[in-house]
Image 1 (cartoon, one colour):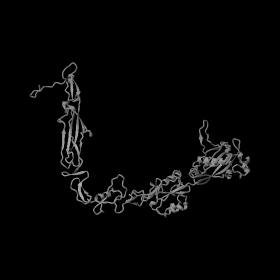
Image 2 (cartoon, one colour):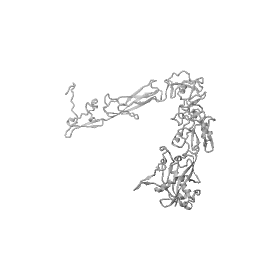
Image 3 (cartoon, rainbow, N blue to C red):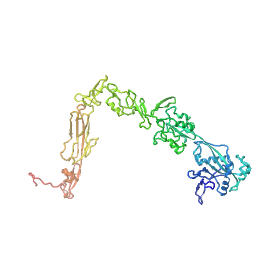
Length: 606
């Protein structure tokens, strides 16, 4: 803290040094002119200290004597401040927004307008860092070489010091660490920030408004507000606002707040849907500064209701030659439907589509590839048919269309199978076969396409659906699983199914390798040809009889497949396709099979 102001905290930026820590200095050099040394001072902590003061950006030399002389002359400097003739003028979007930017432009102007500068202390209010619109004065305490003042004795300077009393100036001369004669003086730098119209600048400009359509932007001095549009010309305060120009808050906002508005002319009434709920604008609700963090967030989340039934007109240009206008609304209603807005924008949905008298439908546009249901009426031309009534209740009839008269409505039900009522060209009803069926003199309306036969798969061994092949092995049993007949006439008319095998099936185990076929034929006398057929191929694969054990697995069900080699005598079993062979050990002879007891004619042993 300084001895003169306990509210200022001076912070020097420090950098490590091989031997010591020392203050970091910023030096500005203009060709051969003296160096300007700057030391950054942090902004006053106005929220924590009892008496907030102005934030300062200060430059100073490192010697104690230099600082003491500087402090002793503060009162005289403030009284003798001289204003520079020209002002630093910026638009709001290009104005310096941080300490570094302000430091640079102010010091640059001092160096440009004042000669002999060796030290500059710049005082700048923390509020100015937020691009506040208006004119400000930036006060600078400048230390200059005495030689830069006319005559070096205080008689004047080359930058407008003629008004200073020569004797008073002479008393302010001091000697710095370099043995130079210097003087400390006060200068005021005019700083002007011009308002930017946030409502009219391009969207790419960082100052552009964040109002969400359909809310309108109203420019204010240094900021802007968002305003919900009004349906009444007398309530249309936007025209009073001057179409984006700066407005007088005292009259404009008072007029706006005195207006009587319905729910569609106020922001959405739920805080989860909009900031400033149930308000005509963000004025008095959001932060006055529309570019602060809170101000921007508040305005960007301000939502005015979008009238779903309001039609807006847009212009389109075709090859830069012709222009057409298209009127549309956000409501998803058919072009010939009537849009009815709900009493509150918070209703879901907040509109309804109604068809004009004489038309039927849900009033909503039809989907491009969706199934369209045509409304029909009975003979009286007004009463919907039962099918149409159900479709209307479910909202299945899109758009608003004119219903057609169904001549079959009320006609006696057709008694034949697969028959339906149709209307002839003369609008006469009658019974005909349904689509996909043909009339046969003997069978009536029958499916014109032959039935389909699908092999039922073997649940244990499986059946290839493409080839109809089932793989079994020696020792398996063949089970007949048949076919599925897919035919709309299957349960209505007499027919026959024939199953034929390419070779007789054994009653027990399958002993032979190879394959056989099963043919399924279904008679369809109303088609040509008058039958359909499917084939199953059964492949019997070889099994290794040498591995089959008696009374175990396959050997228990099919003892014929148990190898009868005399293994006790050392015979070896060798598997072959469809059979096996027994081989006697080396040095012996015989067939290698076991001895089988002969049976007597009476059945006894022998």
